[in-house]
View (cartoon, rainbow, N blue to C red):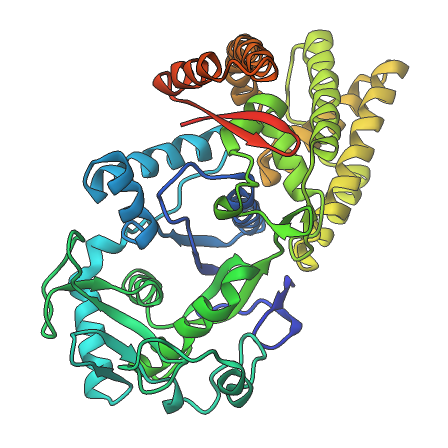
Length: 470
């Protein structure tokens, strides 16, 4: 039996699916206005590994992960670039696929985009209006009426009366209640719009996931996943919308991963404290990043800084060295016959993941087997070495998406190229810093502009000048 922590019931519960041996899972994806950072990557890696585990123990997994491809941030980025919103969305969806591939994340069965479902969204909003769960304002906005649900707040544990009493006075006087949330935004100058019975406009944020999950996975699927920052209001509002549309919650279980924290703050592009996935993979390797993200229990927060990533990268390198030693020594990756020892290690590994996907315990089993592989090779115990190698490569590594070898070869080449580029850029940064110390600001600005033309952005921080590729 597999047990997971359900955010809705606040308890660890057995996984019981709507269809035997089938798990339907929806995981909230990124808003595509920039490259994904290590905080975005945590749910992607966690639920990719969880999906692999479910498949290993015999489930068929049907997974959807969306792209929010229309949003204020996307529009703002488009205006900054001087292009249309779709260019921004298409650009960063392609970059997201690239970064996900670098991390060894398999594509979901469905990757829906909001703008492909606008007609369905309009129909859903119309139904909520007809059912008196939503209302149209004079300017053409449409809002969900939160007061229609007496148990609003059950996912987050927030009480409706407390939310109302603590709510700031909303400058939008067209809303009946300050807590009502937007389903449809009326057209604004310079923004993309679609037709609706209430006038031209575009969907609000929360409605997209309710509609897309229902269209792709049904009225009630098994698991809804995402970062804990989405619990309120996004997932709370998803539940409200879905119950208004179908009379039932969208998912049987809700799984949320903890946030990545940087100096006490959640990692966020708006706080300029992000570390891009491509930068992390090139510096620490795919397996180093995945090990880091799986080293803590998925529900626990993670503090981000270089040291633990470096440790994970070194740990991954040691495992790769052991696996390479085996292939050089034996050169026959045969499949051994399972015996009691192999079953014991595999059982402990699977039991750890069956207990609310406890990856730290599972990784301790894996590293123990790595030590046993080295010992078996030292002792010349070829048969035992083959068994340990098989567990690492074909079982543990396959489930967690690590130690597959091929992606690491590609990343080593990319890493060498990036090290050369890194050395060059840091030399220019040092030159610019010297100009600034000597108050030759014009020359310093010329160097900054030179890098900008090469799609390299300098960011002056309290810790010094850093750079990012864009």
